[in-house]
Image (tube, rainbow, N blue to C red):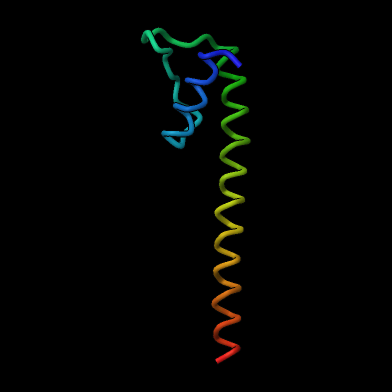
Length: 71
């Protein structure tokens, strides 16, 4: 992975938007093909993060239900 691609992915994940057009460490725009690849990677990472959050909420809801039925 190139440093430009890494910068692009991190910018997208930090803002939570894949429409952002990030710049490299020197402030120059990152080329389009690198942005496209980074956008795909960022979308996958966001999808996995949302799945983790949803799983965490389901576990919490299950624990609450277990507590309420045990009482």
